[in-house]
Image (cartoon, rainbow, N blue to C red; front, side, top):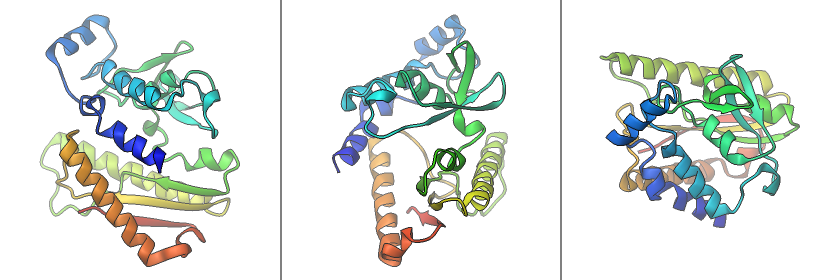
Length: 235
């Protein structure tokens, strides 16, 4: 419970509210530093990572009580990169470096970006490392759209969402005999906003809590007895 409260504290912090905030001076400095084609500076994410590390007191993988694997994309090779040791900060910055939004992160002389580019829900990583019971959350299960996209950004976003969700479904089918996997898929309205405002974030948290409570009431202990994919509609 303490961990849950700490996570909530992190996501409603000023650092989280500023992750996608664009400041004119910051944009100019990003261009001067030649961090690559990105809309926002890396400092936006770094402040959030610093806040997380100050709350937990963990700075390296070795300090963690449970093993952790962080997945990023090696942009040079186009392959998955998995970090399991050393400092947490570079790995966290790499795995959250959304292409075009935040600059890539250089680790050991190689460019790294968001792990979701090659493996958005890395079930295979957990299975390959010996996990027999897996609880995963996949965030790409969008609700039905009543109309087709009317702009390029909408078309790209919808295409990406469908691609990543079906990638997860394929991986689930491929791996379900090797481990017991329960995948929770929150489903948001096509018109949902992802503004980093406290009132919105708290509404998402409450909606997620209610949807999970309803699933547990329906499935009970049976939820974790067998592999399954469960869609959680968020109001």
